[in-house]
Length: 267
Ligand code: KIV
Image (cartoon, rainbow, N blue to C red):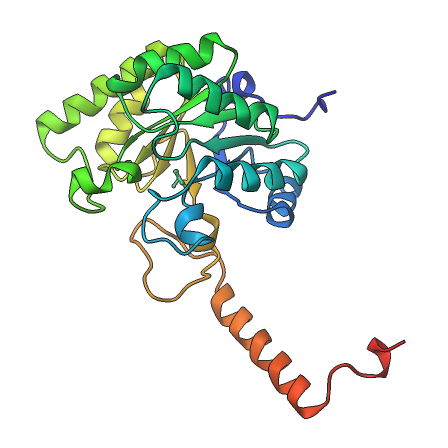
């Protein structure tokens, strides 16, 4: 039974023009539960998992089994948010039947309410097949990280007039194919505004400016869980790297000095 406050793909689609859609990534149950408690609309189990949790340099090595494991953990922590599972590289590109089968596993085995796939016009048939089989799809165009090698790095997309027109056409094509929402990543803010104005589904921006219908951030970025590099589009809402390092250091000192456990922690 669904709770009355549960966010579904159709309910989120209907928010366009009425309320900004707030999305964060999560990869584990306890983090997802906290997000759900504050009313985050969409929790995306992103394949950014590859970098944030698994220590890879790109999202490309992430497997279906990795994603299912973490999507199921997130779903167990969530009551109201829509859990969207990111389909990993080569889980939906090889054939439509494989895409349907893999997307179905996120719904059946991991409790997700939708899947996300990267790509524009080239994905139209896949999106249509998923939607016709009852699987809501979030699109993702612009700087799509699974194409990092084709792009020659993580570079802002859609800067030239031609590239901008192609992204506009991509957005319209996948809207027609049936996506309920669309991530716009790493594109100029004015182009994101143009796309947002011409499509009837919500756009969720990351590095795409304020005109989008919603925003998404990677949780590790926004919590400041690493210090090496902060991309321009990230706002750090906490400095957890400092907090965690301090806690680990204090714990180490306490154990080594015999201050922990104290009598209050002992049976
Ligand atoms: O994998 C991910 O976290 C994503 C978001 C950045 C949109 O795709």
